[in-house]
Length: 407
Ligand SMILES: [Zn+2]
Image 1 (cartoon, rainbow, N blue to C red):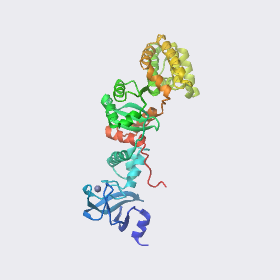
Image 2 (cartoon, protein in one colour; image 1 turned 90 degrees about the vertical axis):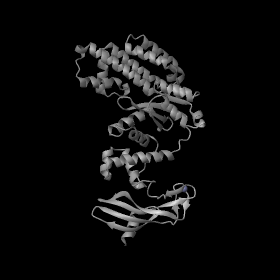
Image 3 (cartoon, protein in one colour; image 1 turned 180 degrees about the vertical axis):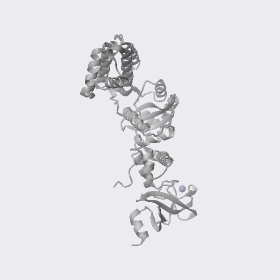
Image 4 (cartoon, rainbow, N blue to C red; image 1 turned 30 degrees about the vertical axis):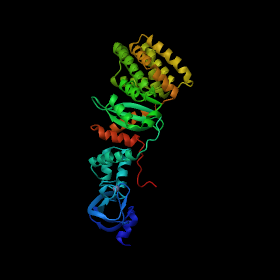
């Protein structure tokens, strides 16, 4: 069998024949020629004659230990619609210097492991990995159709301390991130609303958010008919913070009684935050002991568990009365963080009840928060909003990168 025939079978490059193969010590260079006489303009128009040509190399997936390069005389064409453009080739995205298969492999790996591992495995620089992710995600987003959105969730994330924020907008139905805007002010959310069509804006029946007044006023301004809800995720975050404060205050005033190391302190605080049904026996015992030992911690912990039950109530019609009674008990508890929390929940009363009536769950915002923690832990996006934004879209934007070898 001839070498070019063998490589035709092995590589199966769409739209091209293998013309020539040069096998070096470390590299294999495969020269291609187009199967079709017609040239494809990126606009979809097919043109019969080239304008000029220039050799281009694409890095393809490795062939064992050899780097594999595709070489092709890429042509410019004169399109009746768009003038002189570079022809589109099926094995690569426009303007790319890596094949589609190489890029898709980068994307798939990037959702699962850190950038350095991707770069090491594919033998390229991690700047290349970042550049592929940024550029390809932009292109995939352009192709994505959002369709109808009924219930959205808005959250802010801090990607660099201090004061570097992104506003993230997600779809409750699909759990995907639909948009990301810099900042966390009125403008950030307004920019997103302005991008939607009138019809899309009218379709949105509910917007869930944290207690941010900026998100609230942007929504009231642009979507006057939408119901504003407060995510259970954020309500429980406020509650856990109040519990932390009660715990810290009790520990400081009764330091001698408890005599905890900082490790034990952290372990206890985490156990207190954990939902009662998710505690293992050791942590359950820890919670039992400390809540019995200290009155304030005991009260704050029970109140936290009771508030969690609010979001699992089987008859939403009973929720307003349940929440009303909870707020009264917290306000009368004589424990400062609980009194402050009671005031806050009173202020957001309608929004919390709306959440329960509409059945808005934690899933979207919890998913976003967990994924961003993971992305940050893997070292993406610490320093650049662009890199983090691309990674969030890649992991949560419903882009679903697929491996080229998947059949
Ligand atoms: Zn064209």
